[in-house]
Structures are given as C-alpha cells and as structure tokens.
Picture 1: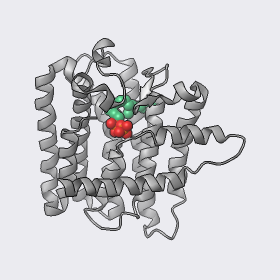
Picture 2 (picture 1 turned 90 degrees about the vertical axis):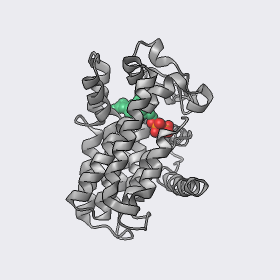
Picture 3 (picture 1 turned 45 degrees about the vertical axis):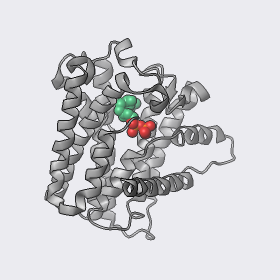
Length: 295
Ligand code: GRG
C-alpha cells in the first residue's frame, strides 16, 4: 500500500508541476484572472481524473509525459466545473476544497470568468501540443473530440442541467444525471489515456466499461461522505444534501444499501480490467483507493 501511495504521489506531484507551468501568472491588466484560477486549481484537489488519464495510458506505454497535457486539460475542466457549480445560480456553496469558494474570494464576475478561462485554456494546451511530444495529430484530435463531447451538453453540462431542472425522484434519472454530470469526465479521462496510448476498439470498450462504473461508484461514495464524512476532511460542511432535501443515493436508498451499491459498482468496474491482465493492477488499486477514500 505504501508503495502505491508513492505511485500516486509521484504522479500527483508531476501533474501539479505541469499545471503550474500551464497556469503561470501574468503581470498584466487582467492579472486577477490568474490569481483566481491558481487559487482554485491549487486549493488541494485529489487529481483523480488526471491520474486516471495517466494510469489508462500506462496500460500501453510507460512515458507519462506524453498524455500529461491532456491530463492537465482534464483537471482544468474539472476545476472550472466546480467553480461554476459553487456559484449562487447553481449549487450556491461557500466552501470548496477547504477554502472559500472562488466567487466568495473573488466575486461572482471573476469566478464565472475564471471558469471560462480554464475551459479555454484546456483546449489551448491541447492545440499547443507540439513535436516535442510524440503523439500523432489523429490521436490528439480524437482525444480532443472525446474531451469536448464529455464536457458539453451531452456530457457534464447536460448532467448539470438534469440536476438543476428535473425532479429526480427515481434511480433511473439519478443514474442518468450522475453518468453525465460526474461520470462523463471520469469516463473521458480514461478513454483519452487509452486513445493516446493506441488502444484498439476492444481495449477502449473495456476502459469505457471500467470508467462508467467507477464514475457511478465515485458518486455514490460522494453521497455517503456527505452523511458520514468529516467536515475538515471533505473541505466543506457535510449534511448539506439532507438539509437541502437533495435526492441522492443515500436519501433514496439509505446508507447501508448505498454502501452495498458502491461496492458492487467498484467490483463491476474492476472486472473490466481482467482483459488487461496484470497491466490493469494500478487502475484496480486506484478503484479501491476511491472506494475507501475519506474526502
Ligand atoms: C457547472 C457545467 C457545470 C458542471 C458542474 C461535476 C459538476 C458539474 C459539479 C460538481 C458537483 C459535485 C460536488 C459532484 C459530486 C462529485 C464530484 C464531482 C466531486 C468533486 O470531485 P473530486 O472529489 O474533487 O474529485 P477534488 O476537489 O478532489 O478535485
């Protein structure tokens, strides 16, 4: 386990260093946008999605600097979604990652623009991938297509709309919402790693299955943490789902059934890795780490 924690830390540190380079502050008239972006990106996220991109790539090749720009792009889109999700017009959350949310610190106008800027930056760094990195333009385009689709109206944004504007009163719509809102980006994180690594259709199919179930398990865990987690570990007040009468896996099924579901989904996701033999070990350990996470 200690060894795997080091495996994670190594990748997390590399991702953070690359993010710092991509998001370097500029001393110009709009410098506040860099302050806001850096504030939110470096507020202590777990970097699950970019680590999934690297780990999925590592099923096929060892050089994790190759998928790194995409891994950072995924984290930028994730952070943008959290900044916008916290806005008063959406979830209206005052805290994120243990600190005042972006709009609380910088105001709503700057928070909206920081999210917009992160989304644009993510695609800028993909278009800037140059000859130093040995990936074919076809793979870059395909991975970029997957990322933009997953972030948009048929993916994360679509899921957010269902969250805001539908009465989610049964498992079917709850699952639809989460497969899109949280699941689409987790799914894309893995598929992008596979595409850049040269996965064939069967391999991509197994990564797709793995990450869809993992994304749902991740969300069920998030709902469980809202009732069982500790404020100081989660970085924002717990119990908000019940307080806001939000429909979650826990409010719909109860804690025990939600835990059972999370375990089943994790096991299902791991079974898709059998196809990769021993090469799937790190993804399997990541899935277990997510199952037992405390934040
Ligand atoms: C605003 C377009 C738009 C979309 C928002 C993903 C999302 C869509 C909102 C987040 C709402 C939320 C808190 C969902 C629960 C699951 C989740 C995505 C948790 C946050 O992800 P972590 O745990 O966060 O990976 P860190 O801070 O570790 O990066």
